Image 1: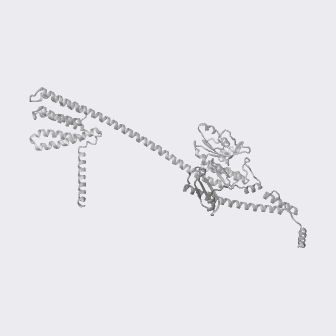
Image 2: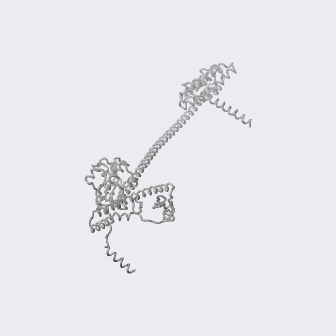
Image 3: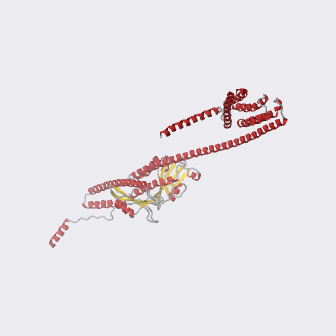
Length: 588
């Protein structure tokens, strides 16, 4: 174990030393920092590496063989000079000096009689020098060097002191020329290949850049879409919160004066949702015209002053909705642009009209307008239909209570109708798939029976293909079950989630509290009305002075108050009562 531990630091030290040596070698052969072109940097690295190796070799030879000091000194000078130029800002001078110097060294050696064998000297060194030159110089520089080497071989008889055979000079010169030509061809082929590879690299880089640009554009597009979707979700959430607040305020406003109630609705809808104009139309008795009964804007007030009305089924989306019973959106572009010609509402750019329905019967239209183009979407019709249905329900409850808003709706203004309506008050309502609210009759299902018996929420899956999943939630006030919420899913395979059940339970609790408050209010109102009726009847009876007038006033006030079909009062004389008692005593 100790040997292994001792060996590990040693190997790490060796690896570190090797890495330092490699880094030092890279620095030694690296070209100047100003040289950035890849092909030139590669040739300069090769030049510096060869020059360093030859410098070490010739320096060793100079020390080992002082007799050849001239030869080694010349070659050492060329190697060192080439290396220094290769490390400078002009490395091309270094490659030329290196190639030209080593090509010239052979011919100089022949000229100074350092070598007596022409063919052996030239063929042993010049082709190698040409090969190295083709690797480190540019094609143009290499062509010059190859021509120089071939001419020096052909013209050797002019500068050689020893005679030779002409055929030898021709054959050697031809070999040098052929070698230069071949190397030049290889160099040009290599250059064309490098250019082709460079073109491919540039094309790949360009394609990569295009892909990056495309991806960046897509990322920005997706980011913008995500931001737009998030903003839309936030706006929709804010609108839903405003609608929830509107629902609470509408439910709490049932005790307002009927003449002010519709105007109040238009004002709070405009304030909560920021609409330019909100109007409520109600149909007349004959269902021929939709009459504007309330509006929040100044233009709407002018329309109210001149009793503005639109024909059912006529031009405009209000006429269309009042006849069809379907919501509609109109924009300021395209075919819908013809609707925006109302001088009282010149800023309107978008309009949405929703039917106000009791069951399937249209009683009016909720008209909403905005100065923004394309302010409404198709999904808004579903959201605002709930608001229109709630307004319809408030209107229906007021009519049931005998508070008339318009002659186009059924009215019961007498106390007889009021009492009868209380006895026949609807005990349940159903929300249908088309967005309408209709009266619902009491139903009995196993889920409801279980929920009513246990007082707990019951969720049952579909028992067959003809049935649907059911969710039954009891409505409780102080642990007393006063009703139930029955939900039937549209899909057969629907499974109720915990969040959905918790939401409906929360709604049930709030509805129970609201119902209890309404019951207490109605009970207080009923008692106050009874006290008022008793005080009025007592006062009227007290005003009578004669015996007959007292009896007449009594039955008249009682009959009016209770809405009775027939009311009578009868008094018996004391004498007749005494005679009957005497007869009974005698019989006994």
